[in-house]
Structures are given as C-alpha cells and as structure tokens.
Image (cartoon, rainbow, N blue to C red):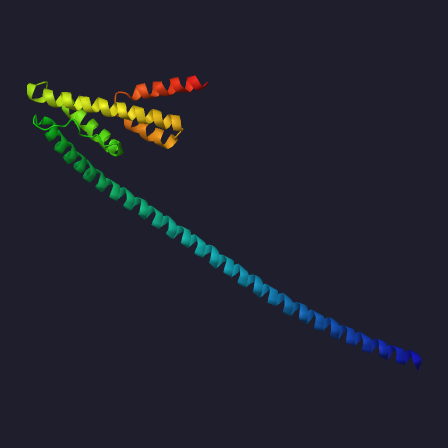
Length: 199
C-alpha cells in the first residue's frame, strides 16, 4: 500500500511540475512576443526616423542650392549696376578735372575717405592714360597725376603706421588699395626692409 501511495504522490508531483513548466513556457512565449513587437516597433521607428532624416537632409541640400543660386543671380545683377555707378562717379570727377576753372587741389583731402579717394583717383588715372596727349587734356592729366601720387603717398604712410601698430587688418586693407598703384612694390620693399631690421 505504501508503494502505491508513493507512486500516486509522484504522479501528482509530475502533473504539477508539467503544469508549472507549461505555465512558464506560456509566460516565456508571451514575453518573447512582447519583446519581438517592441523590437519591430523600434525598427519601424528607426526606419521612419532615418527616412525622415534623409528627407530633411535632402530638403536642406535643395534649399542651400537655391540660396547659392539666388546669391549668384543677385551678384551678377549687382555687379553691372555697381560698374554703372562707378562709371558715373568717374565721369563726374573727370568733368571737374577737365574744367580749367575748377580748383581741384583740395579734392580728396578728407583722410576718413581715403579708401574712396584711392578708388576714384585710380579710375581717373587709368581713363586719362587712354586719352591722347593733346593740349586740352594736359592740364587734367597733370592734376590727376599729382593727386594720384599724393594719395599713393598717403596710403604708403597709413600702411607704415598700421605696420608699427602691428594692425594686420589695416595692413591688409592698405596693401589691397596700393596693389592698384605703382607704389605697390615700394610698399612690399619697405615691409621687407622693416622686417629685416627687426631680425
């Protein structure tokens, strides 16, 4: 009788264990499905985000290209306009230099407008070089040459002052302005000489 009773207990235990195993397997399966769904959702979200990012990058690229195109268009339109303004300004000053009664000796004396003066006198100098050596242009050529040399001297002086101050920004500005003048090489030579003195 004891053996039979022991067998019944073992059978009950086996049934209970199998039920527990089945229950645990169901839980594992449920958990696996939950995680699978989460992973699938994450993959979908990642794909959606990645696609969205690609679209955003593409749109940014398109916008950047448009901005550059607009910039080029504006530049191409503003350049001829600026050239026209420059030509009118040069013509206005040329008229004054050609007028024998117009005293231009004090023209371009404002130190704060040296950059503008350098640009205008350079234009005038070039224009007058193209004119024939006739008596009606001689006086104007002389006056422009005098102002040209005076402005060039002033630019060289300002460059030297900037060099003493070690103001690289100002030096760059004046060397750029002087590049249009004949004294550009003198400026470079002076700079090299001064550098050698320091060395």
